[in-house]
Image (cartoon, rainbow, N blue to C red; front, side, top):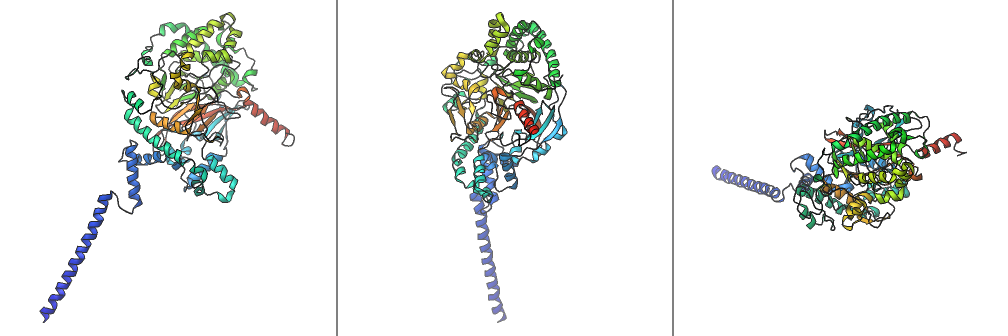
Amino acid sequence: KTTREVAPVATGETSGAAQSQQKSRKEKSKKDVAPAVTGETIGTAQGRQTSAKEVAAAVAGETTGTAQGRQKSTKDVAGSVAADTTGSAQGRQKFTNEIAGEGIETVETASTESADSLPLQLPRQLSHGNDLEEHPDDEADRAVRIHAEFDEYDPLRKRTTVRSHQGDVLRSRRKRQFKQMMNEGPGEWDFSHITSSRTLSEYEKEDAITNWAVLVGKALWCYMKGAGQIGQRQKLGLVSAAFNIGFGRCSGSTSVTCSMDVVKPGGNRSRGKGALRRATAVVSQLKELVSRVGKEEDDVLDCEWEVDALSFLFSADYMDSLMILAGGASWSLRDDQTVVQISQPCRVFGDIHGQLRDLLMFFHAFGLPSKTGPSFVFNGDFVDRGAHQLEVIGVLFALKIAFPKRIFLVRGNHEDTLMNRKYGFYETCVEKLGSFAEKAFSNFEKAFEWLPLACLIDGKILTVHGGIGDGKWTIDELACVKRPLNSEVFLETNNRWLYNILWSDPIPDDDGGTDLFGVHTSPRTASAVNFGWNITKTFCAMNGIDVIVRSHQCLEEGRGFEVMHDQHLVRVFSARDYEGHRNDASMISICKDRTSLNRVQLVLRMHGLRSLVRLEQEVSQVSLGPDEA
């Protein structure tokens, strides 16, 4: 009986255990099969997020296996919309600071060095360490960063003030939502409200299209940057339809050969010995004049500056000196490529327009060019309208001859015969050069035709005078354009893309109109265009660059610089109080720095000269008092 009773119990236990084990194996099998089919653990957000990042990294050409590559790819896909993380306190603080940033001022003494270039490294109190903490990781991952502060030199008080960027120089498409929030009152200051607002939804499609264009552009740049791909670019519509320029290393039309084949560098040194002697003498006089300007007690506008700079710089025989310098510069410019490639450290100047005293003040406050110092890039529009046009172009040509590997001149729309006859340079030559005017003017125009059209800094910053037009061209294609280029070449229909490199303008992100996206006609001329933020971002992606620096525009009561198009485009203008605009003048210094992640970045920092007209108004108001003013 005991055996009979025990046996069923044991059998029942054994059967129950077997059933339990079988059920456990089935559940385990289901759990094992599900990840194998889906590729990730179902129900875990982390798995889905990792998979999405890896797919995005593969599309964008990033290394899939590295955490840094996955992070960067996700940020590229998200674009500017995801850059402002609405739920993050740091994102909210950065958003508020960029739109309505308060200026933080630190007063320093101005430098008195003027005989040689100052080192481009920033002093300890201006280091980039603190700046990195103010930027989220998406900016730290970029190849180029725009410093959050700029240096403003006051020639009247002889001091430099460090200021933070104000809302008037940081142009953003999000300003409209911010203004809407201001109008609705503090009770509505909720960033989830921005995401769901009607204003933002109007731009969701444009943001999505641009983000995909950036991804495709990066992929195409990685895949098609080699030789022999021009035909494929044309099939995909990535080259302007009217583009018929031949390329030195590519198949296609041979109507124009690559500019690298035009002149062998160093082949014309023997022709420029006389010009080098004249240039060396001019540079010596320039240093003395810079020192004198820095010591002047009163600050005056360039048009009111009563100094015989022409004779001081170029001697009593200045007519002969200017013609020799123009001829020497013409030969020196032939050694440069159509797209000059240089490395940091360097400084970039915008339009000067014959305002010599502003240029001298920049040299006094921030350093002169030298053989061993940083490179200097002058981004076009050297002449026309100003009171010292011959002096400015003579100084720039002398610097180019004396320091050919440190001075680079980029062509603007006013380095043109038709423009010079219309806007004052020709009249200046006639007035000051007399019987030598025609010959001297011809020598200057011949030199202008050899000016490069762009400058590429460390492969990441493209400097052009006007803009990128419709953006349907590449830097490689521009580099293969043959010079000299006269006025008639730019007016040809098939060269409209070249014309717009000198003439086009960007559309500000917070412009009052509705056409912020794409390419639109320009009020300047029938051939010029205005381009939106999406054109800039796509062009940068397709060419493997991060920032475009351009000039060409003066903003009424502006700082002399602007940052726009999601910090991919910077404008710089170097003539203050230009044509009654009461504007500051600025220039840009570019150097390397390391991020908190030990990555190397190029850092752009702006340096400005205060508007004398606005400064005098401020001093007058302070002296009179608020009631009397």
